[in-house]
Image (cartoon, rainbow, N blue to C red; front, side, top):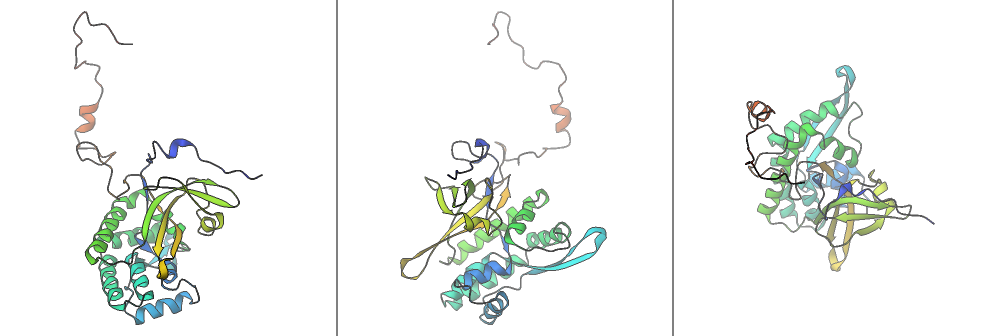
Length: 285
């Protein structure tokens, strides 16, 4: 008899994650784009990219060369704004005008300061082998030094989607794998009342087959009312909420940020009491 492996309760408190929220990737590889373009997977990645370019449904993306130890040059990596996936879906539905609009918006995100800084950082932390999968890209984008840039790019991506008002983005729910056995994986997703079960191979083939792994589940309505469910790796973002906004204190200051250079001095314990308890008031035990 197989049993589900369950995580400790440190991952959730009253249904809300204490360590921030998993977030969808704002940058993707060619493989994710082509997968959304050709659901039957009959086209190779190169052929799919060529077809999207011919239809003006793909942005230029941004490329960089990784560097190994001692500064040795590694592989060439090319990433694209996730908005290209929306363009690929529009092209699949033969809405080429919308696909071109989405691709142009994706090009602006590719050229954003946040995307350029992310590419520059990935060139040094990705390693000489490059980036071979979405799971590896998610792990790299979760690097603490990239938190501000990733969050900023996610905001711009969401703003672009709202501005285009395109019905190409599937419903997305972020969460974690909360139980796993040889047959099925159970996902606890924000906004859904109960865990969702998917085949274990669905998550393992993506490189996220472990309890506690952050994921994004996507529902897309296909022709004829059919629904397609897919599960993808997500970024572990410890300092953002479910909307991709930075967690702040009651004064609007990001968690862990020192307000000014004098704060450590002000907060230093001196042993001098600042509050006096009137005589005759008993201690509360």
